[in-house]
Amino acid sequence: MYLSHLFNLSQIRLFQIWVFIAQATPSPTPSPKPSPSGGADVELLKSQIQFLQDANTRLNNSFGSFVGAINLSFVVFGIILGVVGAISVYLFNQSLKEARQLIRSEVEQRLQLSVSEVVGQQVGNLKQILDREKVLGGISVDYLLPQGQPMLADDYPEEYQLLAQRGFKTTRMLDASKRIKVSGDVVVLDLVNYKLIADTEKNSLPETEIAQLIEKRVAEQLKKIVNVLPNKAVLVVYIRPGKQRINAIDELSPKVKYYASANTPVNLMGTVVDSAYVADAWNKC
Image (cartoon, rainbow, N blue to C red):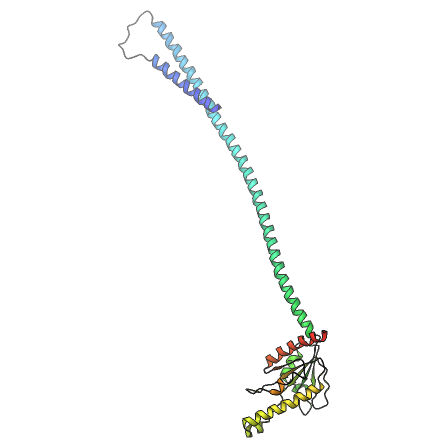
């Protein structure tokens, strides 16, 4: 408002000066003849010049005040802008800091929740694995290879060595050359590393007779093991008869409650582990 007042005052002063100059300036006329009133005109002209000088001085002073006010306004405006800018920067930094803290807290919370879920699932899976391994740690396995002569530890079949490393409570090789005493929860009868048919028989006998010999000898070995098998023991027959189906294994059901067969080392490992779970559940009944 003060600046507007100064500007209007300056316009009024300039207009008054312009009117006065227009009135004081004579129109081009012939040079006046000297008259007795010449002294009065001179005095009037001096007073007009003095008025113009005073008006010019006042105008300069007003313009200087106007410029000073403008400069002061710029200074004040600059200070205000600086203060507002500083406040804005402070508020922005505070808001940015709060936003960062909020985002960080949210990320940490979600990350903790995700990690908790993953860890919980992994812990659950690990617990199930440990529970299964705990079952195996309480099961004993007897391994029978019906050899006619004792074997050294170095001569034990590779399948037995694998089972011995599986983590059962005990894995015991039975000596078939002596009277055996079976006490394992799972009993493996190995008819793969035991030759049911000699090489000479394979080369001299027809396939039908070979099949009959295999059937007969498997039945004999099954009868021997069944006679000494504990009441609560799972029997696993490890045999590889080729295309032939062994009827003696199918006829085990009236004599042995739980039994299974395997024909490869991998299949044998899985079958013995599964049989251990069966034996564990059976012993808890």
